[in-house]
Length: 488
Image (cartoon, rainbow, N blue to C red; front, side, top):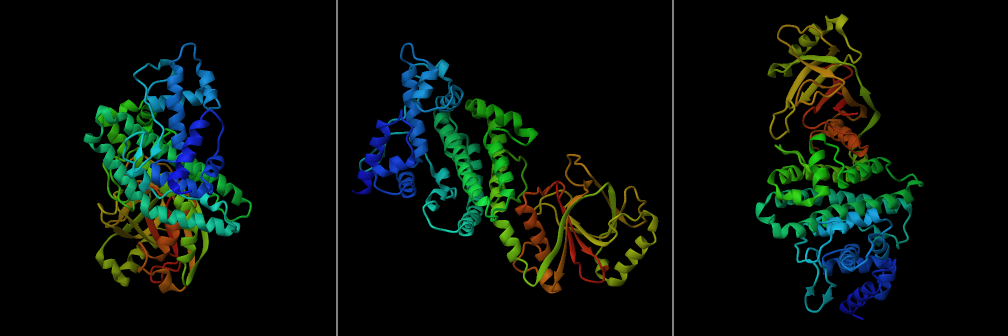
C-alpha cells in the first residue's frame, strides 16, 4: 500500500470515528506504519498535525449540530470527546470566533475533510511556513527505541541545542508577520487566528506537555536538570495568556479572550514587539509578547543543554564554588581611566581605598566592575571600572566615581544596580581561565553565565546587567573569581 492510500485510509478512519475516543496508535494502524512515522508523513503532506485535523473537523461538525433544533451544548461537547462543557466552549470560541450559545447559520467556519489527489484539498487555505520552520521535537519518534535513560536525555539535549540555533529567527519572522498590516485584513483574521493560536501557541503547548511527560519518566534516573520543569511552567503560563509582564498582561488577556482585538495596530505592536536577533541582544523599543515567548522557548532549551556546555567549556580549569548572593545596599567606588593599565597607577587607587578602612563592606576584594549603563551591548559601549565594593553611602574620594547597589529593582535602566549576583571561584590554568577565543567574552564569563542559564536564573539584561572580575589575591595577580548580576 503506497503512502497516498495509507493517508486516505487513515483519514477515512478518522471521519468514521470523530465521535469516538480514538488515539494515534489506532489511526496509524490503518496505514500499517508506526505512530511516529505516520505523524511525520501526515504533517509533511497535510501541513498540520493529526491533532489539529481532528480538532478542526470536530469543531466544524459541532457547529452544524448546534444549529439543529433542541440541541444542547453539553450533549454536543460530550459527543465530540470534550471532558467538560467549559473546555468545549473555549475551543469552539477560538475556532469560530463566537461561543456555542451564540452560533448562527452563515457565521460558522467549515473545515472540510482532506482528500489526496495530486494536490491536497480542503481545510483552510493558509500559509503554514512559519509554523513548520520551528524546530519541533520528535519525542514520539523516540519512544519505540531501546535506549538507556541517559541516551534518551542526550537526544533531548541535542534537539534543544539545534532548536536554539533555529527558533530565534522564526520568532523574529513571526514578529514581522504580525506587524505587516497587509496580512491583517478582516478576511484574513480567522485564518491568522488559526496560524497563531492553534498553529503556533497550541503547538508549543502540545510540545511542552510531551516534553514534561517524557522528562518526568527520566527524572528518577537522575539525568534530568530539574530547572527545565520551572522553565516549562513559565512557558505554559505565557502560552495560556497569563503574561508575567504587567505591561503586557491586559493586552495578552484581551487577545486570548477575543482575537478580533488584533485588528488594532497598537495591540499587534504589543503582541509582536520588535525583532531581537538570533542572540536576543539587539536593542528594542517594544519588548512584546512574542519576545517573551522567544525567551521562554530559549529558557527550556538552556535548561537542557547549558549544563553540558558549561562543563565542556572548563578546559584546563574548573569551578571550585558557585553560589548566589543577596547583599544589602552597598556602593562601588572606583575609576575608569586608560592610565589604570599602568600597575603603579592602579596600586595607588587601591591604596586610597585601603585608607577608608571604616567603610569596608563584607565583600572586600579588588574588583574590575563592568557594565553598559543599562543599555544593550550593541547600543551602549563596554565600561570597566577598577575599585571596590564599600558600605552604602560611603563618601566618594575626589576623582573617583561611584555606583550604588540596592536589593530591589527601581524599574529604571542603569544604576542603581541589583546587589544580587552569582559568585563563582575558579582554579587551574590561568591562561585557560581567561581565554577569549571561542567564548563570547572569556572563559570565566561564559561558564558563569551558562551555569546560571542552565539553572533557570534570570539575568536582568540589559536594564540592570553587570559583571565583575574578582582579584582575590590583589589587582596585580590574575582574577580567579567572577560576579554576574542576577535577579533572584
